[in-house]
Amino acid sequence: YRQMRRKEQDRLARMDVDYQRRKELAEFNARREERLKAAEERTAKKRLKRQKKRQKKKEKKSNSDVQAGDINKESSTMSQDESSDGGSGDD
Image (tube, rainbow, N blue to C red; front, side, top):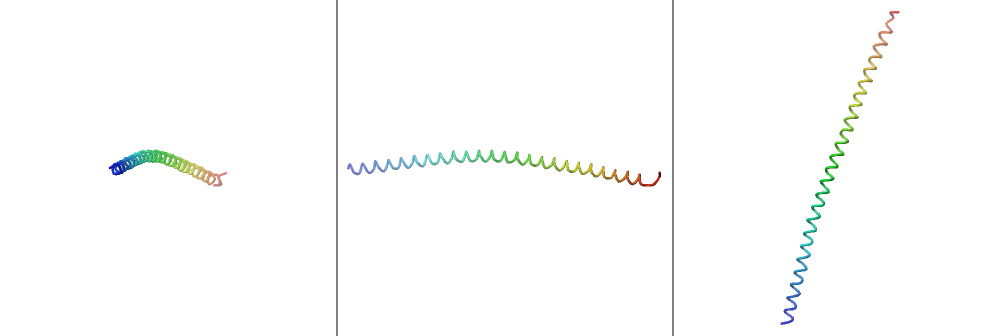
């Protein structure tokens, strides 16, 4: 009887240990998933912010290039107009 009782107590103890281990593992995985999700959200938010910053910088650069190109075109056309008017030989 004592041997059977001891075996049953050991079996119950192993079941309890196994249950506790599974419970802790499940809690750990749940916390881990939450942390990973939060980290991914932060990363996505920062990624979006960086992309917006790059886009604004790119737009600003392209706008300044276009404006600089327009200014250069206007000044070169004005220079050409002046040189063609001045070189007509009216003097």
